[in-house]
Image (cartoon, rainbow, N blue to C red; front, side, top):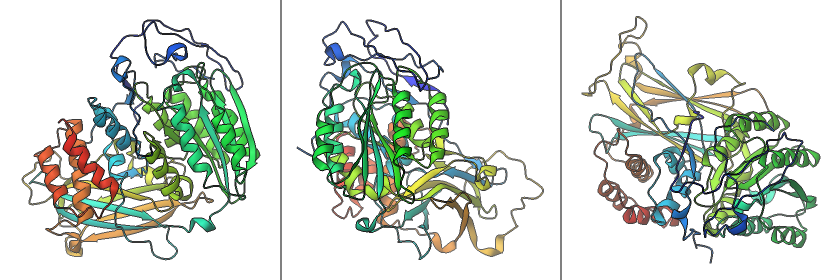
Length: 532
């Protein structure tokens, strides 16, 4: 993934802050003030310039009314994938992604009337925010894989292929015990109502789901880190809630020190065969100690070898460091969600608790091999920061994404059949004859590699996609996914959006049975209310 960052600045900072860089074992404190009437008051945060690589009611959405006053959000630049020639590149390889932060964040931007930042739009995360009616896996397999090919609604020269993966569901009453560390950012940048107060409500909701099997710790960080709870029983609800309610925001942000301490506490209470996980709640504004993406990546890559997973919950507006939060989750073997309401917290931490907290397969990679006899070109929609080389597919040392219980993963490809009018610049290769494989009736083969949570050697599953996968009529899952992808491309002003318009998205949604799914219904309203 590119580590370039794009910073949007609506108003320049009126006062710069000096920063002290320390290692994981060192702590510092500090604060900074703006000479404005922002809601931060004396709790106004320090901001990194981002260029340093130095070490050491439930449905109410929270939107800052003074949002336009300070907008210092950061996103990794997305270089959109183009089409590839099958003769030149017959293999497409990527890591799965079950993060959903992008959709919730984009929803926040649209509902608050903000212009959507193109680099905040990760289409794969928009697709994977929603539930699809994919079949349950066969006995003994961690997930099912299904495919469909149909006409592409935004490009008459291509077809649209869906690869859908669904992880096995679990009976959560029979789950393994959990060792959870709530790592909470209590720095000055977390002062606003949509930050620390919403964090407290979110973790209080999760606390209601815990019991005597679980061990709960709370670590906070600002200028320094502090252990608020150290391995208490999950049934000590009053003690957990009291600790959460006592938190207050103020100071600078020594996030790396807090991360180090959280891993120490998680390892101290490690449960063999259990679910050992840190849940980090932050706006991502790490401005003391380790703060660059590359250093954060190295930090959590080393720490996750302990068997402790790191998931990230993003909060707030105007100062989100999305790039850093995604880096932490992707390299900490966890997932990344954005919380903009109590309802979203319930979705992530209760309704989808299995997917968020219980890993059923790790380092999951998908490789699609296209048959040049039938397909001459393809484009993976989204997953730009999850692309892998073909050699990485069989390399068990190469990290990839994790799948939680009940999670669905959806990937869309635009594919050009050999009779398409599309042109591809590639030389015919001696050993890529278009006649090879023509009689097998297979468009392509989807291969999946994964590791069991407690193993380090991958297993391989293969799924040939035959002529029977093609249908002129989309099913509801395919039509809804296509509508989400179209909307994402419009928001990004993608050069591949073809004929996609807000009207065409709504037309597809009108033809789709949304099955009283509140999130899909909300998406339709979001499209209606968007100003694109």
